Length: 360
Ligand code: PHE
Image 1 (spheres, helix red, strand yellow):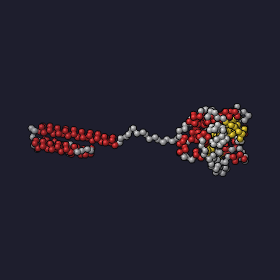
Image 2 (cartoon, protein in one colour):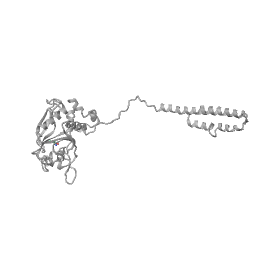
Image 3 (cartoon, protein in one colour):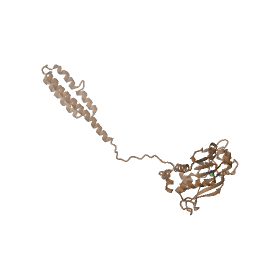
Image 4 (tube, protein in one colour):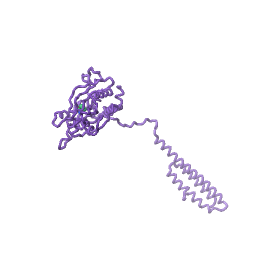
């Protein structure tokens, strides 16, 4: 090949390569272009292999020109490669853009059930008076639910608690009808002084209506020591009423009967809505019933091996649903277990302190 033909072919390749490169905008097409012109079997490479056939005097010149063309094409290739890479990034950035100024979506993390909040609040009130919170079994034996509470098998008082009996041959397993069996369990395992509260579910075989549920919550209280008197019970319950319903609350004790206390009382707080005058919330009586209480019966102490000549104690039982109904003017106990989120969400903003803080 002579020098002229070589130069003409070189120009030709350069022209076509430049034109073809201009139309390329993707990396696979660019790779094909590279193979076609610059690769080991590419046109430029093949042409340069024929340099040896050029007359010696003109060979260096031809070689220099060919190298310039190769350099130019390699540079154009690199520039295109960068443009494709950068161009792709720009398009991707545009397509995947995130608007960081949009407010985030608030995750729905839920909230505690009003009953749980009330139990937490009660536990805290009693903790400040030195009571420890403990929990007991919901499936109980009649031994703890009745016998140790001074309610023998044929005692008519058993009928007061409409008991759900678990289907076992002996009928000795029941759903606990109150939290009082924990009085015996705690005293069996702890020597006085004892100060505990026991929140939890209780069960009764009852027709449901606005004030009766077959499952509801109680909070049991028990204090046993050498000098516990009725006035201690009264002071603790008075403080409870203040914490729950406000600083000027008064409480009332009336005689009542529970086989495991003597004397026994029911206790009430004066209605925080009408201050005792009588209104719809207290059904005209001026008083709201909170629960039962009394001094622990000597037979109960004896039954768990505590000498009633040395130790005395008081016990009380609160209805947890009842406390919420009284404080928030809720008139149907079934609302708590109905799982209507519109009702439950009303309590979402209640911390364990909200109710007390607002009234103290
Ligand atoms: N356990 C009783 C009830 O459920 C309430 C109570 C508890 C009464 C403690 C006196 C002492 O009716």
